[in-house]
Picture 1: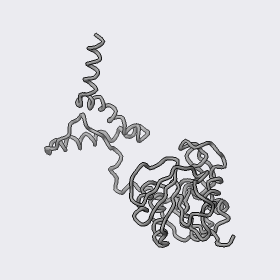
Picture 2 (picture 1 turned 45 degrees about the vertical axis):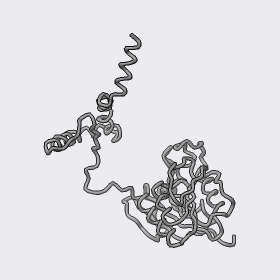
Picture 3 (picture 1 turned 135 degrees about the horizontal axis):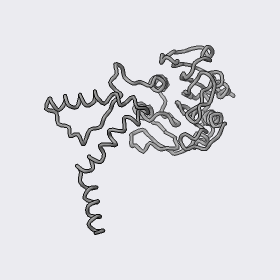
Picture 4 (picture 1 turned 120 degrees about the vertical axis):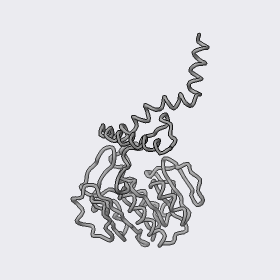
Length: 268
């Protein structure tokens, strides 16, 4: 009897049609879970109307393989203004500076990948990308103790990273001074005359545990007081990009993005 049950369970696991049927409830439930509320259920009538219309036009799509995506019928692209503008901003400046090699600490993977099309890139993160690209050299490390010599890096970026350090979100140790320590490390490794491309949320100063911290622009400048500010750009709460702006006037923003180009003095 035990052998018969074992044979039956193995057959079910191997049989592709049975596996698809077993996955069906999960696939139907995922949009509800991903959208985090039951409003997603309102999209299902439209989804099934589209499915029946597709079949009526001769399309082939077995119901056991449906995979509902319910939230993307919109008039505009879903663009994260922070990540979109900061990547364009940093990329343009790095191209302009024509560096032979660039170092990035923990920034968005797509941005790092694009950088490899213009220069050699050393990417440092506690979570390796595990990809293979020409010009990409990965090294596992933490921003609290970068595997780099003092004053050794002429070009370095760290975009939307420092605000997370010490909050445990990515498995890092809890540390209320995490952002301060991370900023000190970036300053330590930056070579005299070198450029730091840095971004983080700015506005009303607070900690939204464990997602991120928000600093005022002046607090960011204090973090990097040993460096010279070359350029400040802001993505405001309404998603608009503001180039070459003043360091004041952003205190009442809720969750803006500050993009700071810093340079290390040649003679300290």
